[in-house]
Length: 89
Ligand SMILES: [Zn+2]
Image (cartoon, rainbow, N blue to C red; front, side):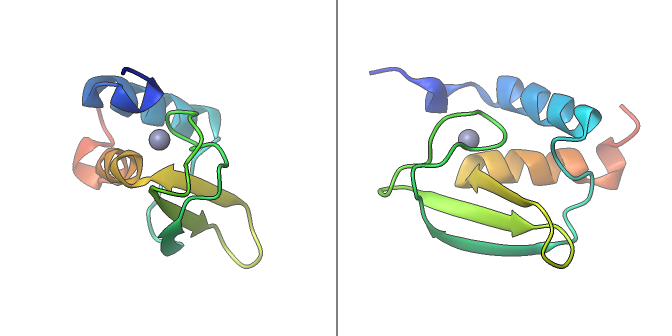
């Protein structure tokens, strides 16, 4: 069965970059982050819900700031796009 979570990494990276450009995602990974079980809320990168059988990464920007939720692979993609070596491209 195919669903949103099977998006190729290239597509996820494009979405992460787009979200960062629009300001929907922080441009720096230097924030607090927790891992836990999914709560059914949408992932900020791929837009699919993160189910209870999946790992959810929850990132909080600043003190009491915005909360961003990621699937584990989506978080990896975002971190990769945040890396300074890729910022210029
Ligand atoms: Zn995702």
